[in-house]
Image (cartoon, rainbow, N blue to C red; front, side, top):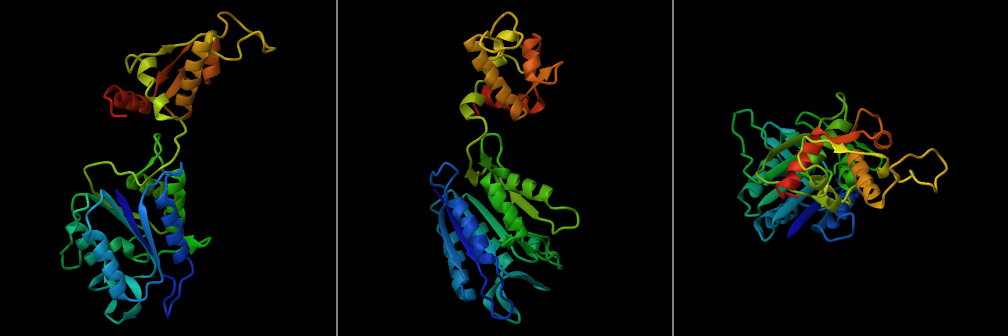
Length: 322
């Protein structure tokens, strides 16, 4: 079982925001289902919560109920930093009582029996979460916790196009931009995607983690199915061998197509293999040998071989890990 608590607050009396509810609704929608429509996270979306007490109760109950494998807490709103630490701000904020301490959120996650906890903050100064205080004390990041934040502790989180910049990229990542070859979107994959999209002069996202297992936040339909990827060990008996090709692998090398053809003519069984090899090339698992394109590798009776990534997936299939 997986669950998510997604919070967005716009209605601050003194400094209202415009995009945080959009952020929460966008993230909540994507976490609810995978791209094929199958159920994903049991998601609760909360917007414009009025008080610190109300929000603290929600967060505490969320982490204290440990009857699930993975939990995601997401917040979009104001963030604040002072000499005591970082805070997510609630509308009833007052001097030295601005909201909920980020250290308290991390402490609740640390104490939770839920196996995997992911905390995602899109607010100013959010990168202070899990960082040492000036006195040297720090709330530890215990095993099973990952933290993704919009910016470093001394930075502001900026908005654009109806969303925070960070959440806008997070949405794209969950839609598939950060998916691996099997269609899984992980916290590490999201960070890599967001990190590459933001330049040196932009706010810098922060990723902190202490995990011992892979966690998928969402799955999308992969460009090449796992069923086809598993055939990689059928085509390459050894990971360093080349797969020999000839014109019989090329579908268009037949009399029905008006261009020069050559023997051996296309064979359906070889064409089927070749189409899968071309799919492998499209996702970086295979390259032609001594030719620029797979078509010419077949027509000129050359070969193809595994890339470094191909070696990795060959070993995963060989070891029955996928």
